[in-house]
Image (tube, rainbow, N blue to C red):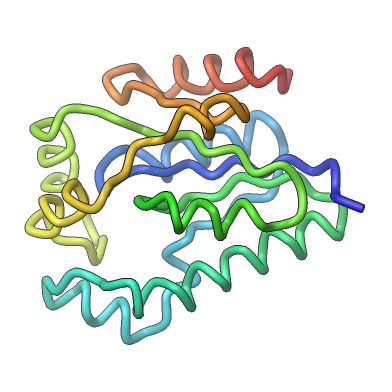
Length: 173
């Protein structure tokens, strides 16, 4: 039997505000949160640190580990909030196989705003030079994903406005 847990996957390219929104949602809803970056093996982090984009061979084990975490959380009765770039439909399809209701929250915005945000971050392994490859890889949410409750969110809004939008639209209050 499928779990009734809800899993909010805050997705988008680097600099879109995934961590900020996920932390705010986790706090507001009192749900456990995880950063997808925590699931990367050291080799992936080293590759990104060197300015080399990951390929699908790098991403599949990482995505399987994330899906497993979601399923374990659901088996414990937990709804969750998770950050994950989830740039391709195939990645989201894999994550959606996790137990529970997986909802994608796509943080979307102008390239210039994303670049500025990445450039101002401290202590993150993703350099601004990888933004173009992420934007080229990004496959926007499909009408099917949107019809299942996933949302496209405008990053020009404040984190507080985005939390309210998510909570209201998904009836999580």
